[in-house]
Amino acid sequence: MADLAPALPPLFPEDRGALAYDSRLALCKLLTGPCIDPDSPLWPPLLRDEAEVRSRLAEVFLDLVIDRERKVAFTRPAETGELDVPVLQRSTPLSYLESVLLLHLRQVLVDADTRGERAVVEESELLEVLGVYAPGAGADQVLATKRISAAIDKMRKNTILQGIRGDDRRFEVSPTLRLLFPAEEVAALAGAYQALASGNAASQSSEDDDE
Image (cartoon, rainbow, N blue to C red):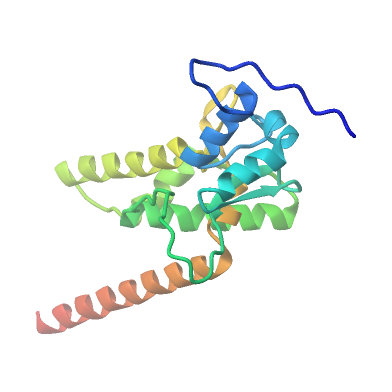
């Protein structure tokens, strides 16, 4: 009979957990999102205790995804068929500008992959891209700039944009975006915005004709 692994000492009173402290932190990070990457100190314990972490996530109807090629880990709802299960993952609503930014970053990531390069963007580039979708003058321009900055900050907060050490004006687009925002969803969102833009153009043309 194989020897059983020694039980870990409890971390706090009434602790009944079996995971090491760092693996519990990795589990918490996966639950709160959005991902764990190799630069995180939680990457090694996640790989070490992958089976246990995967088991605990399955108990709350979540699936652990570890893409070793792109070196990123995150959770998604498990395929539960007809079972009636709660949805634990938080969804984050996106504004129009945030959605446009997400589409742009997704394309930057695809283009960089094609060239075999890192997907790096400059803050000035993002400001220029989003400026087309948030025009304004005077007080309206100040508000538009604030909205653009908020959209960029949201991508940084959710680690879609990752800062480059020593350069606070350039960011790397996380490869997680490719997995969290698959091609079919990109196409659907882009199609919706194209239809919206066409509708706005038609409306503007009609107004010009009336004038």
